[in-house]
Amino acid sequence: MVYRRYIKLELKTDKQSFLIPESNEIEEYSIPVGKYKIVINDNVTVQCDECETINFKSGEVTNVMIIQTENDGYQCKTFQLTGPNKIHMLWQIPQYILITLGEVMFSVTALEFSFKQVPASMKSILTVIWLCSAGIGNLITVVFVKMNLFQHQAWEYLMFACKKLFI
Image 1 (tube, rainbow, N blue to C red):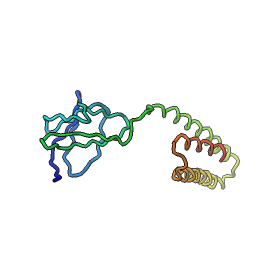
Image 2 (cartoon, rainbow, N blue to C red):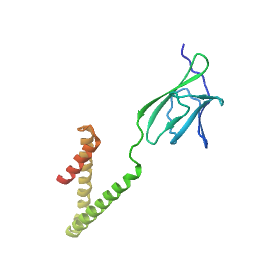
Image 3 (cartoon, one colour):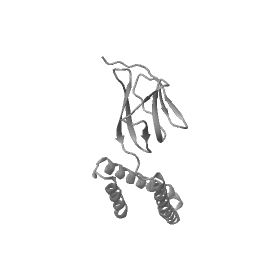
Image 4 (cartoon, rainbow, N blue to C red):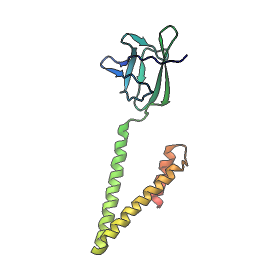
């Protein structure tokens, strides 16, 4: 017989505690990075995968399943769906700086040149053409992404870089 009993579930560290509210459904929670003890009904500490604590890392997605055993104890099992981040998020900053500088240098100079060469009555049409070309470029990118041509994302990025050079 399978039944569900409501329990008070808490994740505790030395500094803080997170209470998981009772629910009828399986829920998704964002838990800050750290090592946690699972405490049930304020007094039972559950061992998870033969360990005293669960270590949640940055970027990982983990399912935690708590099962009540026959002798009114609890057993915990974890299933890692996505591994933790291997590269720190701050490595994105140089990429954003380069993309922003490239966009500013290309867009500003191209639009300045275009607006100086175009008569006043055609400036709105030039803006429409500029925005449509950007939209078509985004559409081409979406089509390539949805085609799933490459297994590794690095090859996909290389393809986009080559596309930028030739188109």
